[in-house]
Image 1: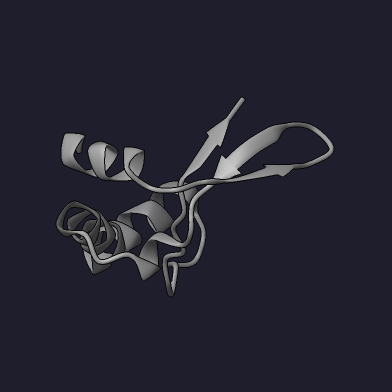
Image 2: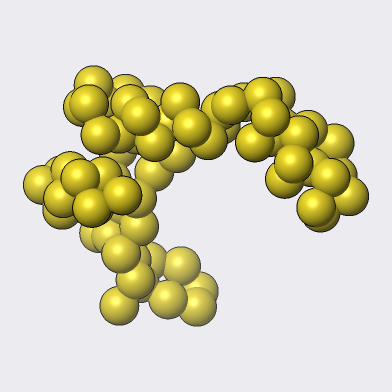
Length: 73
């Protein structure tokens, strides 16, 4: 996880605001080819993991994973 955090720290972020807060957002992490982020993406997309999350929250299994990084402040 430390390698993924380091990879996220090296990204460029765009400033955005909503009614409730301000934040910085990265590009979609699915558009980035980085070894640590690729592993994180593969782990989150794992069929068994998605099944377990669906079971834990009593929802249908996710069909896809959208990923981005946000910094709130």
